[in-house]
Image (tube, rainbow, N blue to C red):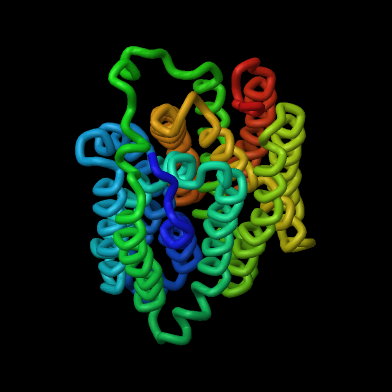
Length: 393
């Protein structure tokens, strides 16, 4: 394949970064606005329980479905249709009604699920020798936009005079990403780069795929409980909704430099081991502080949980390096995200069901601490696999 021109690469980089911006905005903006949406009557308490569980459920379906979709209609069309779904779903959330908000979130996260699976492979297919720096850039944009959405979600809603208007306003970024992707994809043979060899369907998954899937499942479970319920937990302890949103923003902002460090270390097995221990310990200690002394130093607990959130970019870096090429990385991404997100759905859904039944948050937080320890164990098993990650390829 002929290397793209500098202009074509710049356009593709801009498109990939805008795609990354949208991968968590629909989640964090809904999370921080849940109390206001309920207070304003735009969302019933019963519907609110579903919102934090929708991303992992849709991501699970997307993980299984996306590789087939990419083969069927091509990677470019798959991402285009997916971003169209994200755009429409986020626009629907302007309507202050439970059905519209839940339905819009479901549609948006379904589209995000497809882009989630495709993005590591797209980076590998289009960035060449720049893969590590592009991976760092897009994971940084992903975390940064999520943090901005969390911290600014409540103030934007207050500025616009309605939680539903504040929720729908973030659709602007989905529109921009869709337009930029359509323009940039014309300058790259993305479909050709991601086309699997004829014999690939008969080959086994790369070694380490299932350990990677287990690690992905645990980090997603922990991350989406934090993203979906941290503001509510904080408000329950007496913290204002605006400050609760800032706490989630801190978690995600801290995950940016932590994620950059994790990605930079992921090219060696020793670096992976250090990263696994750091992210697992950060989550365990941060959640322990939230459980034992929630109002003593909530910002500090958020910082530690932010270190833990770097497990996500660490996992993406490992997925991008999996297998022998971009097509095989797509297979690994589909398995890791499909199975991983399916398992992780029990986290936010279980937390919401427990909370709605009148349970205290303590048992949920204890379960998260146990999950963080288990994540560390699985991550160390992954780092000991002789062929994965593909550190020295």
